[in-house]
Image (cartoon, rainbow, N blue to C red; front, top):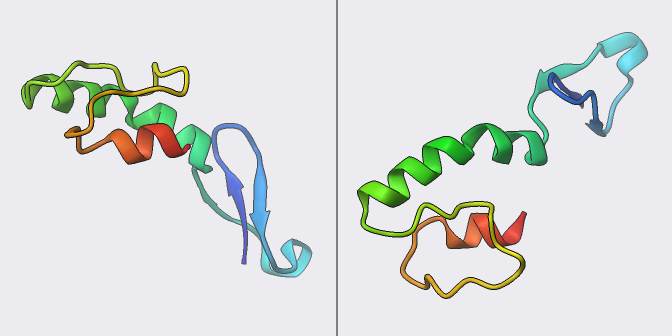
Length: 73
C-alpha cells in the first residue's frame, strides 16, 4: 500500500496508487511535529524539562520516557 502524508504530501510504501489509490496519514516527521506539544506537556507533568525536539544531538535526561523518540527521529 502506498501512503501519502496529509500535511506535507510525502509518499512512502509500495503499491500501485494509480489503481489502488493512497492511504493517508502523517509521515514520521509530521507526526513528531504534531505530538511535540503533548509530549512537552507530559514531560512537565512528570517533573522533567519540557525539551522534546529541542536537542542538538545531546540529551542528559536518561529517565525521560520520550528520550528515545526525541533523539531517534
